[in-house]
Amino acid sequence: MDTVVPIDEEYFFDDMVIISQTDLKGEIIYANRAFCEISGYQVSELVGQPHNIIRHPDMPRAAFEKMWDTIKGGQVWNGLVKNLRKDGRYYWVDTEILPVRDDDERITGYIAARKAASRKDIQEAQETYNKMLDAEI
Image 1 (cartoon, rainbow, N blue to C red):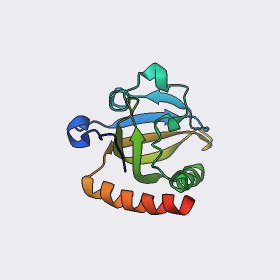
Image 2 (image 1 turned 120 degrees about the vertical axis):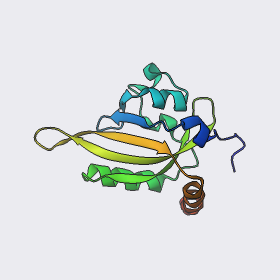
Image 3 (image 1 turned 90 degrees about the vertical axis):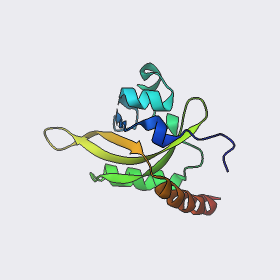
């Protein structure tokens, strides 16, 4: 269980949408202002870093394996993710990630849009992720 207080997503997000784009390896090449404000990082601290810079340790590896399999396969992935802010607090987001393609339909990177997750969805995700984490041990 977390000892750090979560941010109040519903208040803090205020209808903002977090957008980021990565290369094929998952390194951030673009982060919008909302991403910076919500994560607590400056854009200069995010660009060039692996996207997992904001990965919360409570997130099971299997959730990200499924995500990578889906987007590398050219499909859209949607799910809830618990992220870690620079200041140690955390926030939950409802995430959609899709491949970015060039003119020849080759995948050149990924773009993600995230919004605040509902409390109901967070509770369901936490239960699922806790079971997944227990299986990893």
